[in-house]
Length: 196
Image 1 (cartoon, helix red, strand yellow):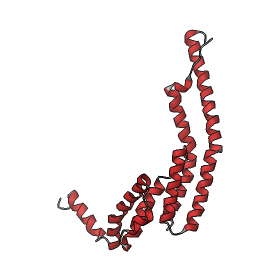
Image 2: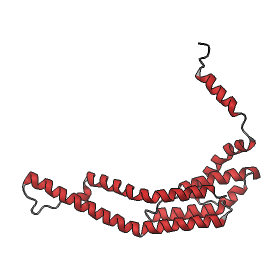
Image 3: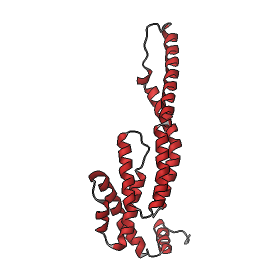
Image 4: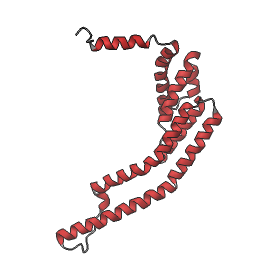
């Protein structure tokens, strides 16, 4: 029975095994959140990102840039509308200011742009076809249901696009179609995180 340890004792032993944090780890814990806040400020207030980074001590800049870059990278998303397109542009410009390996960065950016172009062109055509097909299927089912109940659909106009079931199915279909693009975008995000 003497071998039974409390949760506190187990936790204390685990902490002791971890050892003391290195100076770099302490700097990272302190400055990465400040970098994240800096990125949020850059997006909201249009501050000069480079000027803000230079205000920090030299040993902190690496962690400031890393925290800011993670926020910018995480916010890059599929260009579903003009607002998102403009936000993506600003995010990518911010990363250009933080990353020093421009060649690698531009390589990933070119693949992201191709993905976004495909999403906007062929993806839009696919979404329109899928929407029309879903709408047609719902109209057929709705007409059949009305005909079974009333015996006739003569002169009836059924607006299936307003039905909650239609909206739910459309969102589900959109998510499935977007998930194919998100696989690639997430891969590009990982690559951006690794660039110095």
